[in-house]
Length: 293
Ligand SMILES: [Mn+2]
Image 1: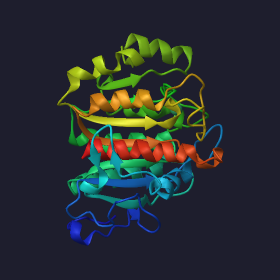
Image 2 (image 1 turned 90 degrees about the vertical axis):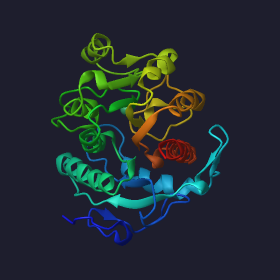
Image 3 (image 1 turned 30 degrees about the vertical axis):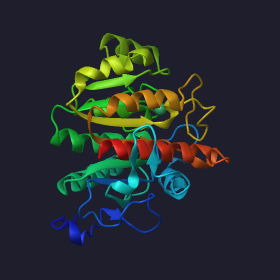
Image 4 (image 1 turned 90 degrees about the horizontal axis):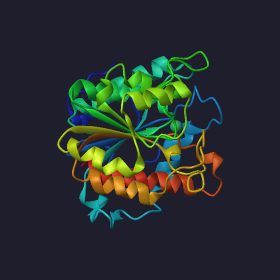
């Protein structure tokens, strides 16, 4: 593994920096505050694959949206952020991928940058959360997702996308995870959601977050939290989801918070020939870039 000592001469075999970058981002981390990186992995996808193409699709369409966000009254052009490219990952099983994501996130944090990861499937989040939780022991993880992701194992893998939050709970205590308006899971998963008080109803979202102002927050956005009518390009769509206006309510609250890391996962662009899902995802990324800075 390479050792990162000078951000002006950032060269690392942890990342493959070839290819397109997110609108307005730089290729070198010097003087930046946020680092975008992609993880093109969907090796445990159990239903409809394609999330490996998510990071590239988000970057490709990013130039089609404005850099200015009227809601936040902030402009990406006023920020300095780097797009490091794709984490170099092996093909196949998830364990070495999660390990590579953890190492890459540690490298980003070591440069003093806040990580903003583009998936890829949700299993990658546990690697990034582990690295961020090591830096911020009081970290609170907020999960937007249709699914509870609390299975101990799924289809023979403990690092399946269906186990994403279970793996995060190995590095975070239960009370440091908030699962926002989960609408799909097993009976056992829902029993746990209720017993632990981790499930937050959509109407309670702002109220539940207010006491956490000042606490370091990691936001993981599984795009299937949104309704398939507005975001069909995802591997495990679930009817009964949310709209941009619901996300905007979360943004309104999070602007008062200390967002230290985020990821946006499970975009499978080829499942939406209209391309709107990718544009939706790019707009989510724009909001997070502006918030995390
Ligand atoms: Mn999900």
